[in-house]
Length: 292
Ligand code: DO4
Ligand code: MG
Image (cartoon, rainbow, N blue to C red):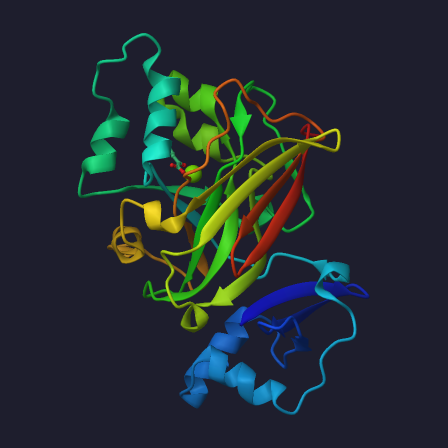
């Protein structure tokens, strides 16, 4: 069971999408209200939805025709880094230059008890499905980072799973890791969506398939896929470090790191289309634009 938000006549609707593709408008404003209702009723969000759709009529419009928005206005998006071997190799490539035999901070963090956790985005910087992501004008080496997102509550409990794009500037971070916030955070450097899969409807969250495709001039110029089983750490481990002595809000999203990196000579360009598909969640599509 997934939940989505979409626009209809300028108003936002909150709906459930069943595993056979039926869509039901829910009697809640958003994901926060669903969670609150579940708590009040002593039920899981899934049970609350099932009870509602038992007597409801599904929408006539198919999912592809809805104007989807972010599935949740997440107050803060955080991200974990170097959680997959592929990311460690890529970070070492951009930072090491000719010093290939030197152990880097990326090697250290990959093996350390404490993971890399960084701040990524706020609602105003986050794009929803089919919206534009922006390049950064002072970077010449920008890539998408397709990642599984954990939607958590203020206590760190996983409520659902979504898709995130942690767009990143490899040249800025490669020049100096202290530039990380600039390599990661700018206007529309992050997208989230198109749905949240309820946590209690996921059998094994380490068995998601992630696929990334990039199209240029209607031609696919890149495709790769991976499984979340390749993740070096457990989700709870990442969440524990995020919430430790922190002020975390309900609906926070934690991106879990990338395992897909385009070839080193690749950079995103104005007009590219990035597609990130995660099994049982959906496909997040965003066009890439020059900043305005
Ligand atoms: O230190 C860089 C961040 C790495 C990252 O975002 C990732 O591994 O996904
Ligand atoms: Mg990342």
